[in-house]
Length: 108
Image (cartoon, rainbow, N blue to C red):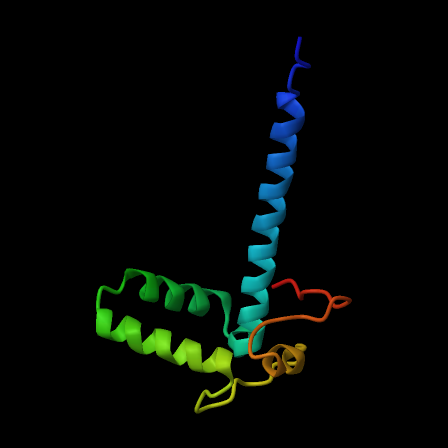
């Protein structure tokens, strides 16, 4: 007879993995905000801008934003992001919002 599978343990493992992935995504979004200099904006303005982007249906405008974002990550952006007191130098040097293994993300 086969040993019964521990579904509770498997479900807990999947739940833990999901939480870790969500936390990683949240941290990366925070790092992106700092790397672009958007952390200098107030919360309402940043939220309003993101809502406008999400609601726009203009595909040409979205494509221009996508290209500008791609240039930012390649390090070929025409205008450098503003320094805002955060550790943006390490993020920009890597071509994107990346951190060294020992650093911590700044909570916003």
